[in-house]
Length: 189
Image (cartoon, rainbow, N blue to C red):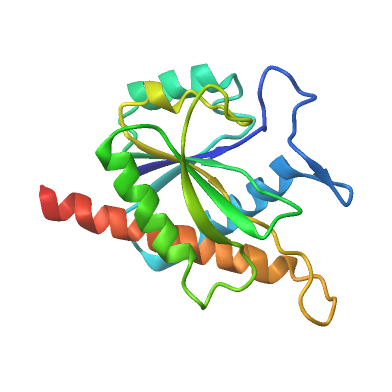
């Protein structure tokens, strides 16, 4: 299975757009960090999953060009990664169609497990429209796709920063999500 991990806001034509600046760090840099940790986990697991991450060597372009690249390179799952600050609710955005709504529900059920405490729970799944703040043209993708904005809850009850727990939770959520989709894909074939 081929998964494209798109770092939202990173390496677009407009280099000023790196997402939200939070405590001196840009959103895109944090997404890059959790995608890097996810790739390490997938490699260590031995799962038959190939991940391709947007970086300065590949997909250093607009969202539209990234979508074209994904369509031309047999991508099975496209995840546009973001982070949501100052909220207790994570967002899952999908673009029409039953298959993408189904995987959005799968991701919601994974996130809402009690074991993930550093990521805000999902209340509603959002259907993508051009009015959505972080519009990415997911409707042009041929593969299953999702825009994922986990809510970063940055302080626990003791007021301590829990960024490591957030990264761990996001990596475990996405790993579980990808492996379940891979299992379904191979069951259908």
